[in-house]
Amino acid sequence: MNLLLEVATNQPHFPYAATIALVVGFIAAATIGSIAWYNSKRPVGWEDKERPDIVPKIDK
Image (tube, rainbow, N blue to C red):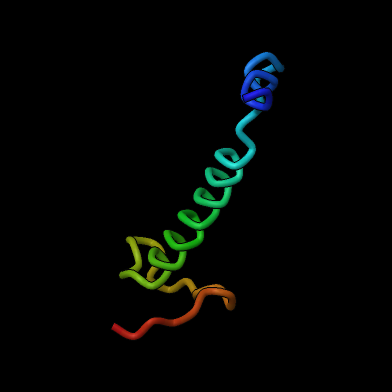
């Protein structure tokens, strides 16, 4: 009980876990989206561009 009261009276704690989850999620979404975009049909003007070496080729 004392621990609960001590936590309640201290300054608010910054939610580090939520922030880390958001950052990791954003990086994962950007990476997966980039891989999907590079493996999709090329948009107009990008037909002759080569895929970056770090993007894996996915067979359809």
